[in-house]
Length: 110
View 1 (cartoon, rainbow, N blue to C red):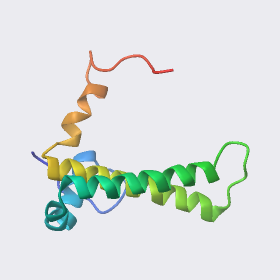
View 2 (tube, helix red, strand yellow; view 1 turned 30 degrees about the horizontal axis):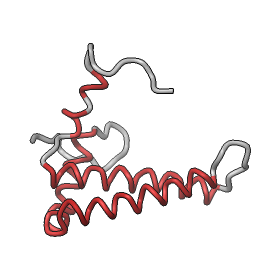
View 3 (cartoon, rainbow, N blue to C red; view 1 turned 90 degrees about the horizontal axis):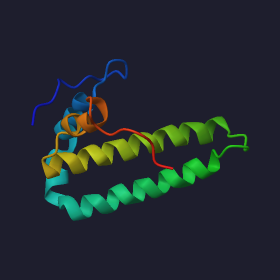
View 4 (tube, helix red, strand yellow; view 1 turned 90 degrees about the vertical axis):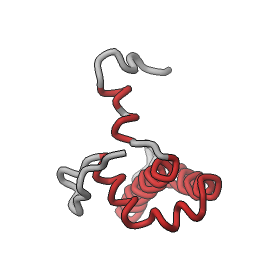
C-alpha cells in the first residue's frame, strides 16, 4: 500500500495523504485493538453523525455550533474509516477507483 506524503492543511489533501496521516498517528494503537474493536468505534461515530444530520435536517435552522459539530462528525467517520482500511490492508485511493475510472460504478440508487 502506498500513500502520498501526509499534508496538514485541508487544501490539496488527498485520500491517500489522509490515510497515511491516520496511519502515522494511530496505527500501533489501532492494530492492537483489531478490526472488530475498531469497527465498533466506527459505528459509534456513524451514530453520532446520524444524530448531527438529524439536528441539521432540512427545514430546521441549524446553529453554528450544530453546523460545526456536523463537520466534526463527518471528519471522525472519515478518520475511523481510514483506520479500518489501514488495519485491513486496504488502500482507499485504490478502492475509490471504482467510482473514478471509466466503466466503474454508473447510475444512481433510488
